[in-house]
Amino acid sequence: MSNVGKGMLAGLAATVVMSLMMLMKGAMGLMPGLDPIAMIAAMMGVSAALAWAVHFMIGVVLWGGGFAVVQTSLPGKQFWVRGVLFAIGAWLIMMVVMMPMAGVGVFGMSLGMMAPVMTLVMHVVFGAVLGGVYGALVTREVVARA
Image 1 (spheres, rainbow, N blue to C red):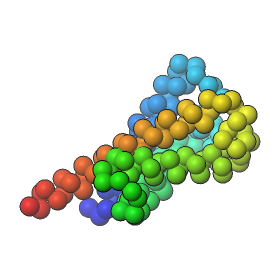
Image 2: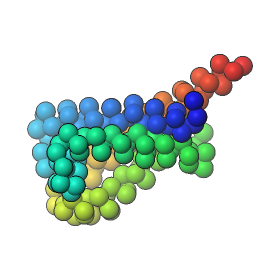
Image 3: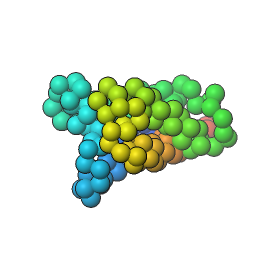
């Protein structure tokens, strides 16, 4: 499997974890206005099901594949650290591009101060899983070749 394929598999794992966190947040009634799936659906004019598919495509293809391409240029020796740094970059893009496009302002500030904090925490977890799974896949292949 190519490194991009490994990145996409790691992106799938990280997106599943982030999606579960989003569902748990919703089930607990925390910040109901912060609903990325509803935001994607509204921005694209599509159903929630299609918005979920877009969410997974972004996490798997864009962030997972993208991480595989750039991870060697990121600081840190451990893959999970590189994953966290990469995900913080993704979070910044979300905060300054996607949130204003969704109509909630830069950093989602119209949703309150907790919006950027909660999304940052979720992205840090996403990045740790992304980097950790990618590192395990790369390491497993190296060990298997030895």
